[in-house]
Image (cartoon, rainbow, N blue to C red; front, side, top):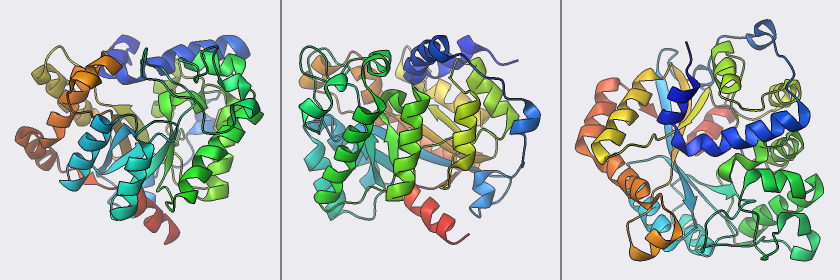
Length: 337
């Protein structure tokens, strides 16, 4: 039986999703979606894209590139050494231009845009890319983006959200870089069905694949609904209509009381995965005195850098028979379908 507590213990990086889900469910209710409506097609997205049907295909994805130099340096180290497959950068943040300039100079790597509507840290903060006068609902009394997802949902209109998302994408295109994919910082774009509709529509309009989960597997649907996600009928309908590739599953690198504890929890997570296409996110950042002032999760972020270069972890991947991909490869396979 699925345990919410166990899910959270293994996935501390998604606790914010639970908070926003509770908020969304209280605000708009949760429509029922029966197994018969969700069980259509047992073929995974991995198999649709041409991978063997019995394989676990993974993307290890670094979030928060652009947030600070330490995040850029850690992500670049992991990508250049072939230790991870994908990353995404935050357009409103101070080190974004450096991240994108590196991506322009190194087009062989998969770097997407981490669409950002929140500024969650105590001292290291940022405002919108668009003109603040056009998106006042996205800005807190201090002039920065709101700290939490519920604050964004309560204060920002869909029109303001779309204005800001377009500004972030267009800024990147104007720099001469086309993101390989797009995803959502802190899950904000899944905090409201109206926000999700914009997210999916822009992905299709710009033809930049979004981080989207396929809920046609009843077990995956039940797991995320039982964990508190606002998976209602409207969301299911939107995802069914979405025309670009999807993930079969999504998770995050679990935490731990020590590096060894975190690594053990990570092994447990990977062993639990079913065949299909899975993205696992994490937030690498080299340890520094400045980094310690940004977030109290600095130790976890530093351990995550160590994790993917750990020889024991690399051997574990080989022993498990994992296949790795990225969004560039996914879109090439999708276009060839």
